[in-house]
Structure formats: structure tokens, C-alpha cells
Image (tube, rainbow, N blue to C red):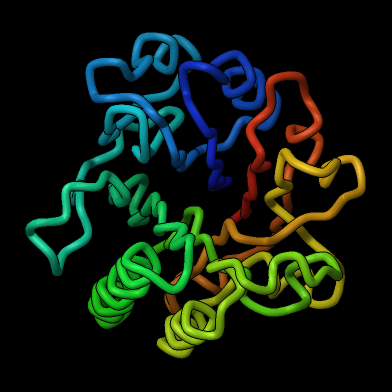
Length: 256
């Protein structure tokens, strides 16, 4: 079973890119973030024509998450992260697909920091940690997939001082990510690629894609019950180099 996460950065603008990747990579489950489309503007017909059933939660101009499943109907379990009933941002969706609970997470960016956006990022992260603990305790096989907007360690970013003030590399979100892993979650990409540079995001500015100046901020975390089934993980890096590409590339895992 192949499960992927892909920040598409405007699903309607990049629909041809998405459909081409789905056809080429053929994931069984694809978790999308940053749809930048409200619910009624989501291209459901095109997704279904490509062979995927889908659940989504959109938002005008910003955010938005979706879970696509090939040959199966995703069973929607959540459309928001618990812990703050007043949070209207579309950043979390959860569905069961073929016996596995899968999330699509779009964790807040948090810039500029310090400030209210960074505070929101940390508060949202705390809610995720609390919910993830409940999922882990349940014993259900879970994949926490998505754009976490966190560079976990210095090994997950190219050598540069230009990001030192950025919210993605601050000690607080890094510590929150480490606390999440401490619950027993397996970081699939880093587990199978422990030493090599592996990136999922390249900023549009300053020729960072051309110089391979990347960051690893898109993650797939596996619950204790699921981790032994991990057999492969990678990044479809070439997708970032295509015309009209998102600034992210899809990351994926294969489970027995």
C-alpha cells in the first residue's frame, strides 16, 4: 500500500500537475494540503475521473486539506483537529482507508515570529500532540501525513544562515516534533534514509530549487502498530522541477 503526502499549493492552478503525478506515481492514498479552494470549488469530478475517491475540507484562498483513495472510498472520521472549537482554519482531515487511519495535516507556518502567528502554530501543535497520543493509545494503525512546517533537525535543511529567524527551524516547534516522536511515532523518511540529505520543499525565491537548497517539512509518521510494515519511502523530487510546479514535492511510503 502506497501512501503519499503532497502540498499542492493551489489545487485548481496545479490540477494538471496533480493529475499527471497521480497517473505516474499511482499512490493508493494521497493526502493533499494547501488546496486554496473553498468546498464548492474543489475539482471533485477531475479527481474521480482519475480513479480516486476523495474527502476534503476547503477554505477560500488559503489552507484546505484532502484525502484521495484509489479503488476505495475513504471513510471520513474528522474534519478538524480537536481542542479548539473556535478554530475555523481548514488544516486537518482524517479518514479510514483499507483499515488504516490516515490524516492530512497542514500545520501553521508561524511566520513572522515571534508574534500571534507563531503562538497559533505552537498551540495547534499542542492540540496535534494531544490527539496523536489518543490515536497511539487506541492501537489502531495510523499514518500522520502532511505538511508540518517544521524542519526537525539541522540535517533536514541545506547549509544556510538565511533561515535562522524562520518559524520552521525554531527550537519550540522542533521540540514539539520531538515530543510527538517520543509517543512512539516512526518518522518514515528519516528511518529509511538516516544519513542522506532528503528534502520535500524548495522555496521559489533565490534559485533555491536550481541549487537544491531544500528543506524537509513534509512528514509521514507511523503508529507503533504500523511501523513494522514499512518497506520503502521516498520523495518524487522530479515533480518540483516541472512547469507550474508546487514548491513542494510529494513524499511517500510503501507498507506491506
